[in-house]
Image (tube, rainbow, N blue to C red; front, side, top):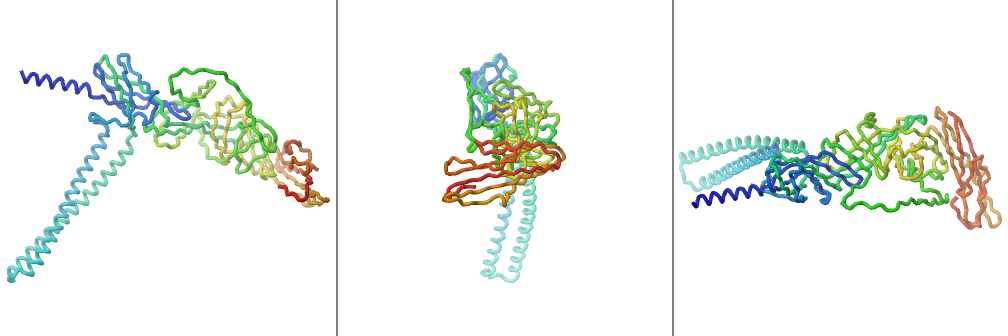
Length: 547
């Protein structure tokens, strides 16, 4: 009777233990929707479940995720009771945390290391034996009182024993060397195999479920993580001023989720991930004028669609032009990339569905993803402001650019097969024309020289009068006609004590409010044009002006 009770108790205990044992499974990433500051990851997993309540431990999810965004999809026979995320799950049942291949190598390393330690111990013991023999030989020789025959026997003993021990040490040293070589090979193999292993994350989902039918249950997992992002990037190539611009639309994707994305279907979105379950409310949508004040040029609209910064280190002083920055890298043309990208646009964002599987490693490094290639019809003109820089800059105007779904980002530029630089595209404005700087063109030469005999200083009573005269020479060294927007300027004053008079402008369009002189030029190949500007400034002689 007692045996039956004990047997029943043990069976019940085993049943309870079995019911409490968690079921482990590893999630595999299927696709990822990457936003500017986050990513929605979709993974799949499967688990063999009994009927009743079970705890599923889903391994290999992102190390940092938004718990409120976790969604678990399961068959209708499975009810998800609770979901919990952790990076520190430890269980005695988690027996498959290491790769079997790596485990075998590690076990072999431990065995070899133990053998090396045994050999080292034996060598140390043999060395101490030699030291003991030497010491004993010295003591025996000094106090033995032995006759010659006995002394010779003792010498032979010590000699033979030392030879035996020395041979043992040599044999052990050879064994030690071979073991060290084997250890090095095993450690190298371990490193190579470890590098081949796909990175797995410490993130885990602990899912409590109620299952109606025993069997293998498929699971769909999705969640948001902030450890991924993407930024738009462009490659711009133009072969001549008569050819369209070939634009390669790219994305720079970075992820540090703890999971290597292997053969993943990517979707890149300009929208913001919806991280809560509150239904959105719409309010009135107002558009407001966003004007900026340009010192020295009065009020003008903020032309953010034009390029910002500097062109090859030169600030552009212009009513029409903003500053630009230029640097760049070579372009790799992929003619078929557009066939694998589907663009979806709504009022608020643009998304790119890419059919080509990509590998994006979890290393925090930038991974380049090609989206599509576009031919942009462009009209070109040159711009020069020789008062600032004696070089011409090529500008490209893109009309009706909104249909290309451009996003804010940097662009590399190559013109006529030469690296030009990097610029920045800002399409978020109301103008229907986008201005791009294609960099300097040394085939259009500009020279601005002061005319010494037409310039000088006079003193009139309490006044000082200075005259400035400059000659501007423009030459088109290209083989085709060009359009050039040439600008210069004369100073303005807000003081009644200072007088400025424009003496000569050579048919320039003069803006008296800004002091800008503008020439719209159509130039033939090898044509040379010259212009002269001259102005006079009169002011009190005790003042110092920045002329």
